[in-house]
Length: 453
Image (spheres, rainbow, N blue to C red):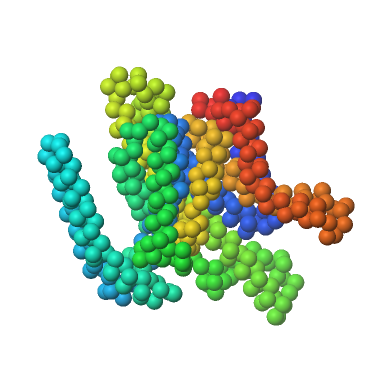
């Protein structure tokens, strides 16, 4: 089987699985899974840019996805005037103090010769800046969080269309990656991985506890949409007429109240499908653009240089390449794509839940997608994103069906039967581990490896 045919077969299998969900369960569920597959594929593609191109072992994906989700709040939610009036001034003064202290510390580090005096001066400036900022920051935060805490209790955002948060999420994640890269990219690969994991946990901890910024564990709900609302569609004459045309065969045999009731039911079902299709079109467009740009970059001179650095950093450095700078570039690019995907996920959910960012979902699964799909191959990363997320979603219902089939002959109330049925919830990690073992044994380079062989 040629590589092109094998790739087509793999993608067709994933498509058949989604179609099976549509026919066997519901098309609304199939489209919901498809949308999440698109976002997962985008995250997998981002990690492939970092690992497959340059060999950067970033296990802080969760933090960059959360920053993308934060962008959805900062961009789309309207500002809370009362909160700004209560504590906005104090926050601004605290920010000015921190900026002044940071600028003075940088000046001291640059112009003073290394000595104990410089170390003492830097420590004094940093401590003074933190203490001075805290004098204004703490009262401002208390005042902001006291403004209708059940509804707001935070500053809000800019009140702009939420689709702009996709760009803002990429920029926010890229900015964080720039700062992290300046600090951690000089470390050895294993230390770099630990540093990114620790920093991502710090990001999540901040988002959970700084209520003035994100409402913390109270969550931010009611985010805007780039697509119509189902209720609005159900009232829109053009949509109702379209539904009537599409279901004309089912409606022509009905009349009066039965006809109206059936039309309303079809409109409700169709509005949900239409909204999910709109999301799918937007997400697919973003994935297509990022995939095209990634392919162009991979096969450009820059991409060949990155692969040379990945394969042998020492030789690349001996040839005059600035390895740390190139690593920083690819780290920022990959993190920006993760930020875009995080903003898209928040848009799809319609809410920002800091407690929902878990390493299992936003780090481990993404790495499984890259490994299974084939690191260094963009199409493999996309395939891995679709395949692994589909299996992750369907593993539990499939496991429940399997356990029900295996225990069909056991009497009701059997302790063994109840135990097996309860264990269906644990099928997801079990299946993921089994897939990893099989891939590592029979396809160690992934389903679509780099080079297509």
